[in-house]
Length: 188
Image (cartoon, rainbow, N blue to C red; front, side, top):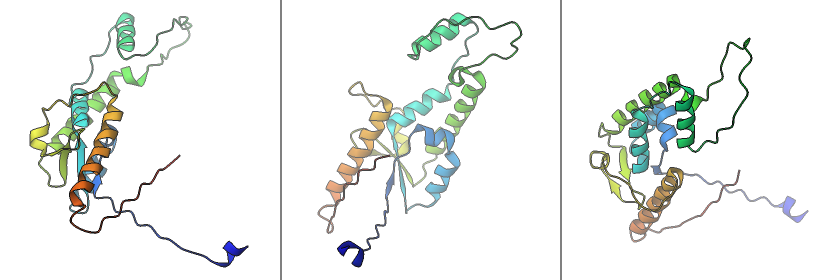
């Protein structure tokens, strides 16, 4: 009852300076990434080296398997379990194909990856590269670096990159102005 008598309004305006896109952002939403880059200096796109490495691999595409043993080998190499399935009935004219092994999908992803790499290499002022340690590099110097370290998934490396970028940028700015750090945890 007491709480309903008084109202405290708190507006929080989040103004991110660094945006760290992952590989899927470049493959699926390159036009949006380009629009964000045009908003420079409002935003700075910080591209993890692991994302560039993934894009370079995807740009090469995959060779479609030509027979069942090739499909099985591809799935095993990707860590996908292979279970024997009964042969389809003769009346079945359509064969279900896993998208990850669909040659048309692979071509589409390869082309999108090439376009993303072209965008990254254009030396746009809104785009910088960042290592997993949070070191910032120009796009021209980071395309051939190998981001090595512990055996982590690429998603974990991208997250580590973002966290180290935040950590490094806040340490640099602490002496410049009154610094307030809020740690927000979002749960979905």
